[in-house]
Each structure stands twice: as C-alpha cells, then as structure tokens.
Amino acid sequence: MRRVRRPPPPPSLASEGALKEREAALQFYANWDGVAKYDKYKAYKAPDVRASLEQAFGGKCAYCETYYASTQPVAIEHYRPKGEVTIGGKRVPPGYYWLASDWANLLPSCTDCNSPRKQDLPGEEGPLTAGKANAFPLASESTRATAPGAEKSERRLLLHPYLDHPEKHLEFVWGTGTVDDGWVRPRNGSAKGAATIAVCALQRRGLRAARRDRLLLLLAHLESVVDARNNVARHPTDTALLHQYTRRLAEVSRFVDGHAPYSLMCRQVVAVYRQKLFGPPEGPP
Image (cartoon, rainbow, N blue to C red; front, side, top):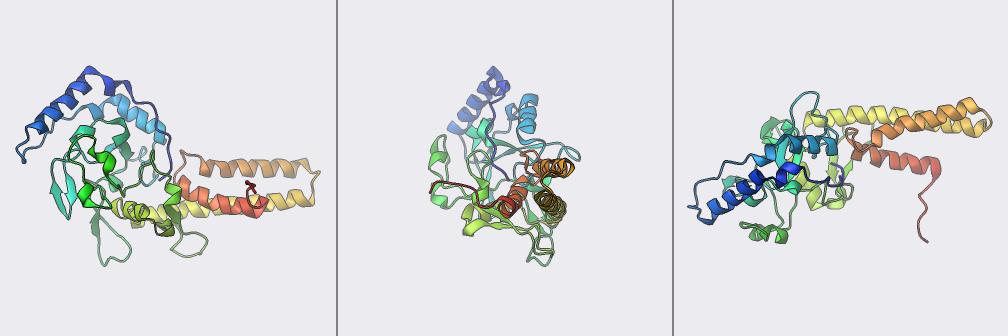
C-alpha cells in the first residue's frame, strides 16, 4: 500500500439518483427490524467512479499494489463494509450503510485482497481462507459505529491510503538472498500494519513471490547505477559514461513511481541505496 492523494469525487456521486439512494438507506435503517438488509446500492458502481479510482491508483489494488487491470476487472471495495461487519468470526448487520457511496470509503481492490479465498500463508499447515470481505478491525469493539457520524470516534486498525502514511506501518524484507525477500511485516510493531497484513492477506505466497521478483529486478538496476556512478567518478569528463549514469537513474525512477507495482517496497530499498550513493539527506540541524 502507498499513500495516495484523494482525487476529486466523480460527478455521479452528487447526482439526484445517488442522493435518493442514500436517503432510502437512511430511512430503511431508521425503521430497521434488526434482520433485513438494504440491498439496492447502485451509486458506487457508476462508470465514472470506476474510472476515477483506476486513474488515481494507476490500475493497482489499493491494498497490495498489484496490477489487476491485465487479468481482472476492478472490485470497488468498501473500506468500511456497507452491509455487514465480521465480528468474532460472525457477520453482523447493519454495517456502514451510510457510507455505501461515500467517496472516501471506496477503493479499488484485486480479488485476492477483497474476497475470502483459500491462501497459502506463512505458519499455516494448509490453505487458510483470507481476504478483507466484511472485515473492519478496531482497537476497541466498544467504539464500533452503528449510526452516521459515529465512525469518527472509532480507532480503526485497517490502513487507508488517503488517511494514513503506510510507510510508517509497513516494511519489507530484502537483501537476505533468501525466500524471505519480498515479505512484509509491521514496522516498529505497528498494530495498523499487523492488522492490514492479516486482513488483506498481504503475506500470501503468490504475492510474496511477485514482490520478490520485482525486488530482484530493482536490485539489479540499482547495482548498475552504483557501477555507473563509480565509472563517472573515475572518468568525470567522459560524456558517454555520464549519459549512461543519467539513463540508469531514470530507469530506477520507474520503480518508485506511484503507479508502479509495489512502489512502497521499492521506495524503501531505493532510500537505502540513495544514502549509499549520496549520503544521508540533509535536514535541519
């Protein structure tokens, strides 16, 4: 996951139809029988919602940063589940119905992060069902919101790309030369990091392997930058070597671009190499 600046809301979410849908859901739960669920949500499925999310996230899953566009349609994920919330292994209504078409509550997700599926996870003897689905963990269940506005008092544990700085909560294993490279773990024991890794199955085997492949490719590019830098240091007047160095730096920049896969991991690795090449960043005394 990477930090993303929240884009402007698409026009359809302010349309008359969307406003009527929100009011209908509010009226339904104002007279709720404690059992039935409102299931007429359509506003969040509008084409401009999908297009805006795909543009903002570059065709990547908001949680795992994997490209979904080449293999699957985007799942428009509700950060806070709209219909039910899984609590203690049970699905409990009513969910966050008032946020069903709230722009900040809608994120693009891949199938593996969003849906409960059998996953090969570390420390498990066999496949374990994992995926966000209706999960929304809190530090204290006593603060769980059941009415509009009450969510502001929740101590949420799931990272949000608009509201959090994921780099403060997640760190990646690299440089060990083992299968551990590409693993993700909570940074400094972050509870948000741990919850997000667990809820979205960010340690699933296929995802670890994809991150490791990306990592190996990045490291090869970074070592080529180091070689090019050393060549320029030995031959500072050689314009061909200088151009080679500049070109290799540009190639590395593609790995840390916000729309590149696993950009948070790549940025953490590049930061270490930057210090190796240029020394620690300058800051206030």
